[in-house]
Image (tube, rainbow, N blue to C red; front, top):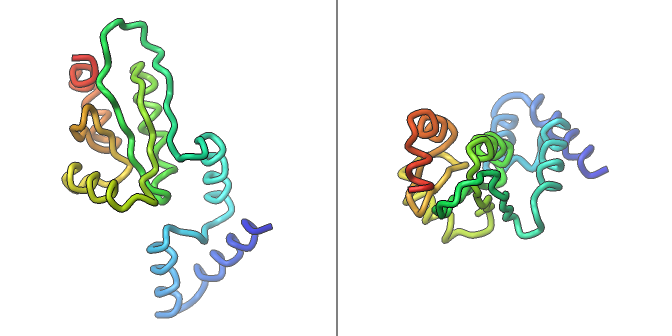
Length: 153
């Protein structure tokens, strides 16, 4: 019921004309898109169902390697949680264990991630405290072999 109301409200602000409509759309974006279309709200619900109550998930490694792996962290905020699956799919395909952490409610973590990622947009991957980057940088690191070197030594 609540999601239908949120979707309906989103439709209304999308149709709102002029400066009022633009202000409403900017406010919705600034607040992390609490109002969104029905498809996006369904995606959010499905994503929330796959994560634990603390907002952190860890995937087991499918690699049979005996080398110790460096810690791999994926940081995101609520607005970007739809893009997290793209990063985790790349990590899963390479047999890398990782932890996914939502930093929405942690201003100190947000500051640290923004500082250490040198302005790369969230979601972002860190290996042993070093920023690898977003999806494009991660794919590039996989294709040239850098990711395996960073993770497995």
